Image 1 (cartoon, rainbow, N blue to C red):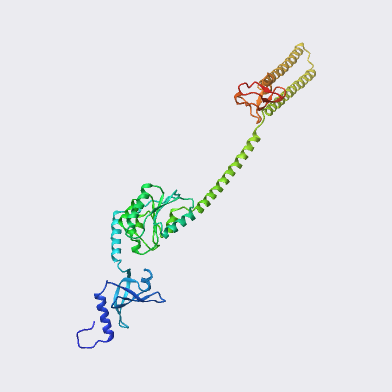
Image 2 (image 1 turned 90 degrees about the vertical axis):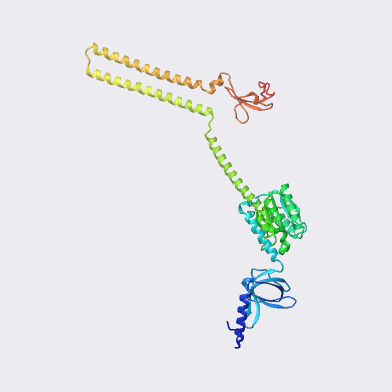
Length: 450
């Protein structure tokens, strides 16, 4: 830095550099308030403007990277800026390179906002474990807002579109002004105590921090945190954050988004229901087809008792025929053996009476044994036929019994099950007959054979 108190003259560049250095060292971190004028936005996205009051003005520059973090300024805005206070050496112009912007007079509000936020956060009022999930299928939805607010119309329009059959309960409260905070507390507490709804929407449209300030009041924040009903906060626009947003169970960027989070989409639910119905019908059809196929298979396996009896009779007849054929074959073999023995005896020319006697005795024994064997086989066959005849249903019918069936072919075993006018089929030992019950079950022995 040149010696400012020597007699040597300074160049313009040296003077501007020295002034720049002095300003940057001694005027850093200051907030400067004024009215925006001569505002220009360059194609590069940088802002150039003057900040003035009643007696003076100062040039300001705010570059694109900084400007993107703040809402767009306009001519005549009263703002406060903080940045690097310096001199643009090339032109010797005094200017502020802006790094931060806030609405004039709101510094104390921001400070109060941050202090209360830090205190409540340290208390655990914003803790994630306190958050409750929103019900998937609420039966009623409550809304805390002003009846005249545009946000209410947006919320109701969204609810009519997503869930037109869902009842809505309004808990009216002012959302701006000195009376807003007490009314908001009363409305939230009323909804919590009555328990009339399953989810509560606290909402209002966008605005300045002053407009939204009731939702930063400690009493409102604590009422939302203590509410026994899950709360969705939809206050302001997407970039607006209030302490109510942190205390609520779910924060929505806008009132419309809050309604979308609180209410299920009816069209989506109907689509899921239609899909479930289709799957159920398909499953039921498959079950029916499988059961029908198994029923048909079982029906093919069923056989009438008469068919089984006929098969058994055929089997007995076959066994009797095979037994008779075996006996005849055995007798024929014996005859052939006897003939061969006779031939042998004839060739041996027996000359003694003893041999003749032995031959006669053998022939007699052979004939007797064949008869005994045939009688035993015949007796066994008769016993088997008698047993088969004893268990035959036809034999039971022959003793005077009969079989009573209803029109579905089911055997009737209980007279109490009969009804007057009911048609029955009776099977006798010889033939069948259709009858009709002509009296009540108190006298089941009366039938009409017409």
